[in-house]
Every structure is written in C-alpha cells, then in structure tokens.
Length: 116
Image (tube, rainbow, N blue to C red; front, top):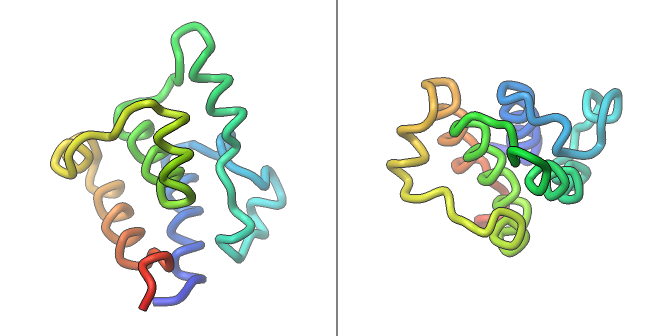
C-alpha cells in the first residue's frame, strides 16, 4: 500500500460520510488533492458547529468517522476538539454500516503513520 492509497481512502471516507465541510482544501482543491499531507481537518469549522445549537449534526457513524480521521491527523487535537473518545473499537464498528467498516479497516491498514 502507498501514501496514494491512504489519500484516496481518506477522501472516499470524507465523501461517503458527507464530511467535506470539515476538511481543507475545499471544492475543486479537494477534488484535485493527491497527497494526504495537503488534507487537513478544518478544526475551526468543527468547533463552530460543535458549539452551535444542537452541536454537530451528524449520525453516530459520521461523528465517529470524523473523530477517527481527525485522530489520524493529530490525536491530541482530536482529544481537544471532541473532549471524548469514540469508545471501544466494537462501539466504533457497531455504529457503522458495512461500507464504513470497510473504510475504517482500509484506513488503518494503509495509514502511513505506523512507520515501517
């Protein structure tokens, strides 16, 4: 697996879960993105929505995927932004449909931050 694989899977997870508003670049820049180092969570957008009336308006699966993607980018930031964990791995998996479970598995396997 290559960094390109991880980048494509991250983009697929973002699109599948309709989380584009929480990542930069936006619009055409997102479509053309081919390097995961250029993909970053928009922490201000996440914080703003979280603090708004009703908080983040996401399903359990969308919220957990957002938390996972932010954590893969920077675990400390994910802890600060969400003030919660996504629970056990079984809770993460149970909240998701089959497509999301497959995306989580592939993201973990292709994640370039594990080292070699």
